[in-house]
Amino acid sequence: MTEKEIDTQTEENNAANLEQEQAQIIMSWFQHMNEVMKSQFPEYEVEGQIGNNPTYGPMFAFTLKTEEKFTSCGFFLNEIMRNFQTNPNAGLWLSSFFVDLLRSPENHPLPNPPQSEDEAKELLDKHIVPYCASAVREEFPDQKIYVDLELHEEHGPVLEAGFVAVQEGNNTCALPLQYLMTLYLLNRDPAEPLIQAMYRLYEENKLGQS
Image (cartoon, rainbow, N blue to C red):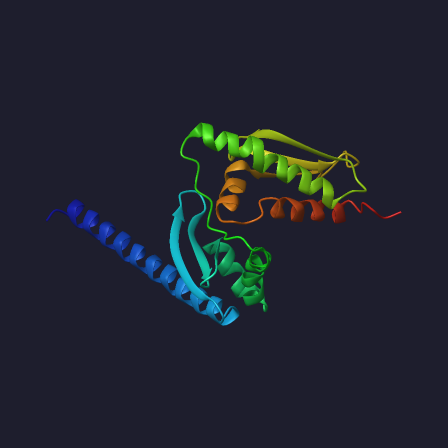
């Protein structure tokens, strides 16, 4: 073997070992979350699955089942790790996403992903973007809100929102449409992170204070 071949072989071995380590970490977290779900919802049968998003990385989805109905919701591994490493009530955080879904009488399977660019555009234009815009405006009835689509150099199309009253400094927040779509496909509220970001702007700019 030449030195170059040895180097190549070493790199391949290191990459394979790293991939195996990452797979073990993902599986370990998945099994842990499965147990958390079972402890939070002992009256339900819990099923889980692992997926991967090319942009946002590993994702977990869990389904709660009874004989009458089933409810599914998904999460990004990085948000699970962040919460379980910093939030003392992380189990409640995880279960909170299911509570509203469980209250309704319908089944809640994960939505089917759009099968074409046209379908994706229609879902964003006719459902996700209008829903996020109205949800943000409802959350801040005392403020004039603007919501618009912009093109970001790094993240592509984004949904941007801000308070009309704030003209200078940090006065807008924006989230990639792809991220909002991914949340929707996980049975999550796509408006929630936008509303959280708007609350930070609201407090930073001392809006609502006389």
